[in-house]
Image (cartoon, rainbow, N blue to C red; front, side, top):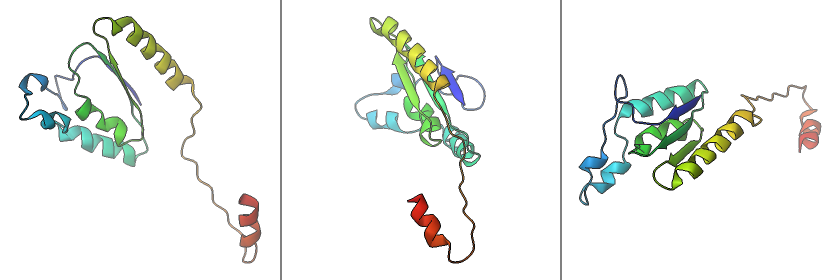
Length: 131
């Protein structure tokens, strides 16, 4: 699954609020914690049914990467973050385009399983051939 996000989800299940306004020196470490456990549960369920999440976040505002990033971390996907504020806007947009094209066109393998069944005595020969 590929998710493109330019802002925090603000309605429905999994809605998030801007935690940056609440941040100060005393509770700065709380910004690294997951704000809504729904994302962690969803990521674990997606992983269970072998769905990987690639998350592309591009924004000039606050993005709760600690919370949204669990979607990629627990499913074996990738997280791409682009800060589109100020002078980085053009460069970030170009990087987003390049990374998205690479993600969509790369060769991917899905759920490969190898089973070797043979009679007794041939296992040693098969293992030597496989390396």
